[in-house]
Image 1 (cartoon, rainbow, N blue to C red):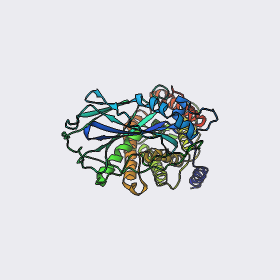
Image 2: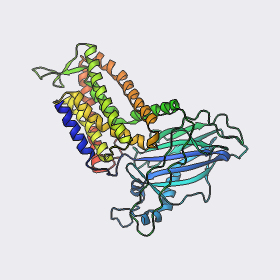
Image 3: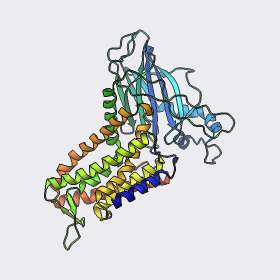
Image 4: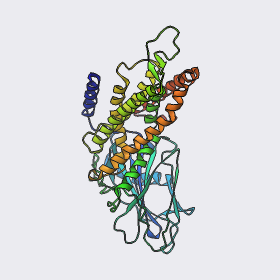
Length: 447
């Protein structure tokens, strides 16, 4: 309990240290709303810091973007972003509608200011012709930042629908550049389908203004329009269970943290003795029950910790700086991997895992907050997202633990799996830590 209290005090002090450090791994947020007549409304939020890195928006190089600088380069931003997102219908390219560009606007996400790029696209079908399918090809920052992600949300709004309804979402990037959507049951002139919608509430995001040089800042009134109604709790729950599984599957730092723990969960710490095989301080556990009990302690501690901070952050109780969160997550992976090689952690491992789990929970919350949820409608998405994260963790345990237990006594496992595997994870985590602390992007570093 002494160790646990110390960890809690450290985390609380860290959370109260500040609320704005404008950096996290690069994301953009796109909402595509399909309408009757072949039109698609594009609403795309792209971080100004990312656009500045590509287009040098800071004209006077004073390290501070003003509204005048952003507004003066708005056409350049649109010209840069548009070619990196293409829509096609039945294999034929959709084109931007002339004069449909919305006025320059910015909006605040959890990690800083984003440009709101919005226009209308016309796909090649008439009002009497039914939709067949849509494809999006996403390649924003693919050459300069292979870690960039585009979070794309598909919505539909047909004739007679007062509000748009969300039907799916997908995360795109270098490893997955395209996504296909089929509209089933849509006839010419009829409303878009709504019976299978698994909608989640869409809320207005908080908006703040940047430094103004010559004109007042126009902020976006809404990230993606009105809230959809009529969705069931079960549909909402299942949708965010899927999002939680996707997040843990795509989060290499979370996965490698758990893998580092699982690799040595089939061993127990012992004092180094003469002739003991490397890594020093580890002996095989005799029984499966002992290994399973260790994993249950670690996973339970991690689950309780990140569930706590995920809820606190999602409801806005605490909002630690995203750069600190991402840096400490990288540090947790580094420490867990190095502890497999040298006995760094003197406290019981479950206590240390609980402390690091508090940090990982803030990382999960950042991903969830930017999916566009209003606080009053947060309970079911929060439960579903958390269940999805737990399901992803259990899948990883089921994959790694039995194999590790079977091989735990072999020299192959020690010398060819744990030693090089832990070393590789430590090196990668060290590079992540450098990138996140120094606010630089090493394009050749995975994750």
